[in-house]
Image 1 (cartoon, rainbow, N blue to C red):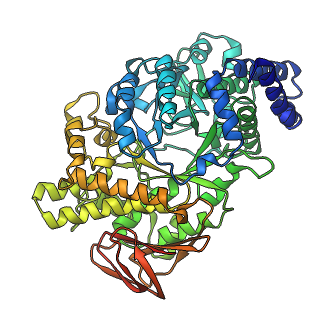
Image 2 (image 1 turned 60 degrees about the vertical axis):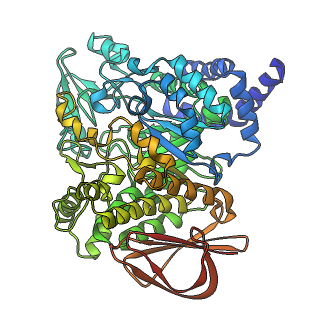
Image 3 (image 1 turned 90 degrees about the vertical axis):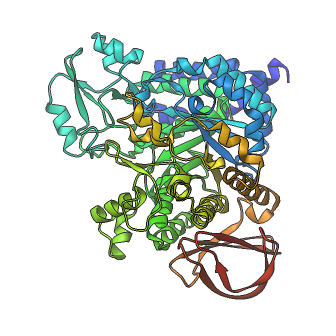
Length: 607
């Protein structure tokens, strides 16, 4: 398309959204015409800067707006340094990524900032961590990924900057304009007033919502850590420039960006400063900005709430916000089930998610870079006789191997309040190899594959954690590093074991069994319409609190997915005389009474 045609296309996109976008902007920023003009001009400028290849991709995706919901998508979250050292190193490993069956790469904590906080405190939204490469390296890598039909995802922290960011440095130096971009106060009067209604996010690691800044001689709002300063989105320049930073990253070739800490964006005295109406206005404006400049881009919401509450971040059909949400609650419930062998909480949690409109799409992962927190529905667990403090202690004892009979090998990170460890070690592989116990090893592999099968069964985007495809185990050597030994999260952040990865092609090895097992799941999901995102899904009663049963049906096909969280074989009593084929073994049989091996699963398909 020629330049004139592209300009008409931009104008058309802008015109369709201008009235709502301007109305929201004027409401938040008190009819600030100068701010609006700056924002609107920025949209056009950033669109002009967008590479032609990405503009063509936008046009293709506009014709198929649900392109990111296809059943052939499988993601992988990577720590660039641990995986390949640098972004250029990742480029050299794209053959391996393709062999894994992965076509979406999410690079965790890539932007410049303080590594000890997991790079949540970003110092520059337009620079990559120097040891990983440059922004140009990212753009080149994204282009190479697109040549292979691999999507690229990034994290974008919306709520705050690091205290080494230029804005914070200028605020410390006394520049009023930049102090106004944060929440800085000469006395503790207003901070104390905020504290009356603001809950604490990290009461152990970073108590309170404010810290004292010696350089500025002011109290500053720091919801998460003292070196992470909350942005004041009531200042129009904050929104304008953060929106431009987001679009800049999409222009480097990112296809999906996770909006970190979005629920905290708007602060108002006398409220809990969470999920306020103005927060949704900001996310809605960001969505419209993307729809104008880069309509092929996807916004991933990151919330730690119950899916029913988090669903507000989808917006509405007429006024959408995020395209997809990260389902952290399901991850916590899944590992809870591994420890209790009782599926009732997980069944309930998934039932709540399935009650949402079918077009709501979630990203599912077994764990994340920061570990597993126990963000569970303790109100529901109380009905099962579980009290929060005692239950959390049990879970941590179980997964650190302190509980009698547990084969899990994890560690707790006391500062961040999360469980650390790779999926393989938490499933018992490490303990089995230590004891040279072949039966325990087989069961640990079954559990590892069963958990992956579960996230492949759900609608949405399944995302592997780098290393899980070869059952990589914990990196205990982190304790020998003075810079890492105090951070238990380094247990599962070790460098990818490429010697172990080399065993993936030998199916008699543990890495080979796991690698081929996950590949089989990917292939079955890709090749069978019953895994379409539009399928009807329902939670079913298997007649056992140890077995989770999920039913899927679409266009005459029906799938029964059975997951046994017990260590022993269990029978699912489904009273279904229909003949099914076991998708992995090829065996035929009815679903009246189905035996599922301990820690295993079955996918039964009826056409």
